Image 1 (cartoon, rainbow, N blue to C red):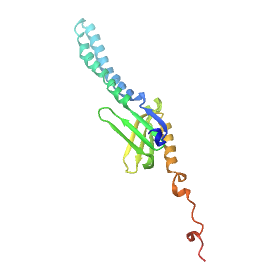
Image 2 (cartoon, rainbow, N blue to C red; image 1 turned 180 degrees about the vertical axis):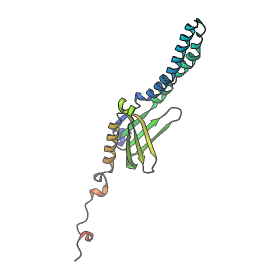
Image 3 (tube, rainbow, N blue to C red; image 1 turned 180 degrees about the horizontal axis):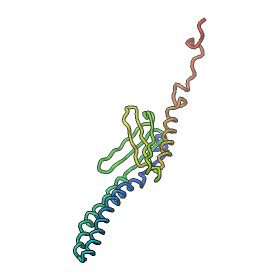
Image 4 (spheres, rainbow, N blue to C red; image 1 turned 90 degrees about the horizontal axis):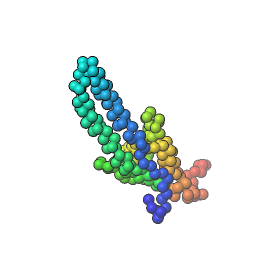
Length: 185
């Protein structure tokens, strides 16, 4: 993808910040019952005149709670190392930190392109573009910001590569004395 090849970068995208939404939502939904339980224990201790009895109950939930707050931090390296580049000739991708997937797909080898937008993705502005190559193996590019734009640009680039005006056969006119197209008489 350098200037010597004449390859132009059409679109370069990083992961959408929505990658953090589900882990944070899971933490909040997990913490709410525990918080309600602690508040119930405190209310019960106040009613039974045992004000200091359940003060240590907070420790049982603070330590795991701090650990749960570290879970979204585990997604930061994945967020920072995610990169998808679309050029006139190929899709180049680098995804993951510990388990890394990287590679290129020439646009001539792209058979079909799908756009998947879950409800949360539509609300926050991200989606998944699934690219299926000639081998039939799908490549899911998840958490792409403005996935509709990427999908459109990818379709346009694939059509530009595979259009007949770019092939050598389309440039040469058929011979004029070709008898295959003449009626038999």
